[in-house]
Length: 244
Ligand SMILES: [Zn+2]
Image 1 (cartoon, rainbow, N blue to C red):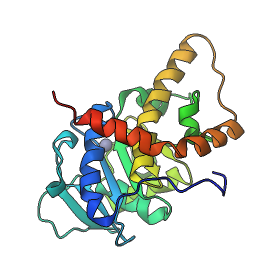
Image 2: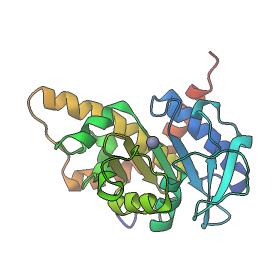
Image 3: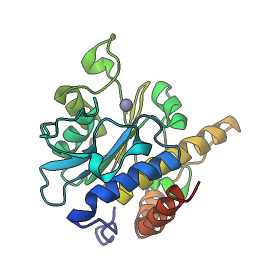
Image 4: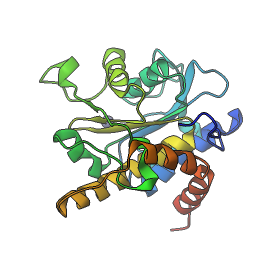
């Protein structure tokens, strides 16, 4: 990311974060990134040592009142059941002070790139954030060969965050992926276009070859597209809330 790039736009005021998080859930369902499973969180605008995440609920049903507040050790005062994999969020926020939002999904086109030797790489200009590389996390490295592949503890969350490193997205073998952003809008955008890129890349490979963005092109596209995040968010939000 060039140093003169603007801040990602549109981070909500503290009082608006719960509403924006509910909207993010609805957008990601409408875009086919989340279904009955997966989740999205945002770091608290009031306290960088805390984050907001829905209680254990299908994302399409999440409303403002369903949002729980967690500290980075994964604790909440809210007695309602929480997502099993809240440690994905807690440990990524702990490891990456620059990250303001996290999307964990099982979006289908991404899965093959986590279970084969073919790396996910940017093939279109909306997905330059995938450069220079998308790491793959394998639970077997920390949990052995008999786990349910879920990130149920701070320890496995920390291992996932270590695998993510400075990247925008980490694939999770046989499970899904986790995308991060410097704003809620950016994390949602990256989750959507990770799936779009995975589709396009798989199709290109089926046609017999693939030309990827250079790292320099990828950086240039990120600088351009970062300015357009509010446009995508506004359209996706209205689309997700359109009358049936
Ligand atoms: Zn999961």
